[in-house]
Image 1 (cartoon, one colour):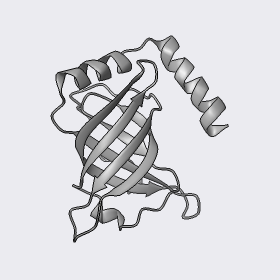
Image 2: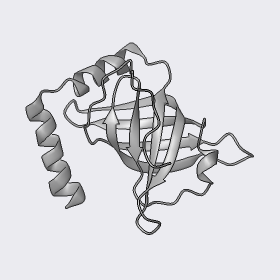
Image 3: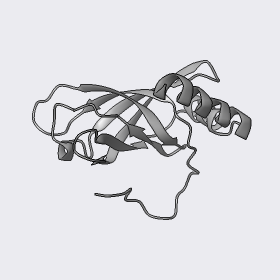
Length: 144
């Protein structure tokens, strides 16, 4: 796949806010124990998120990720909160050249609790100044 595969009509607005996340993935194939992965969001909304796992290799084939259940731990620095949200992987692919290729994972959230929805709304609706600050921090400290 050479690009994101989604329809052009979305229920929720996507916000390009880099946010650290931890994934606990439960593959649907075989008796594989849950897989821990860490990454950063490329975008986030009330419906789901896109996670950039970087160049890390996961211990299962990419096709085994699709439709896997997972728990996402999202740290919301501006709110001082950490959320644990259930979801499903709806797509995954590698992008870039074989050496240095990054893994992207698309996650659809399950049913959100009211407290989680309110926290995500507050986090995503931050003003342009807050989003610019987050991107500057990302550039300075993460990409550094």
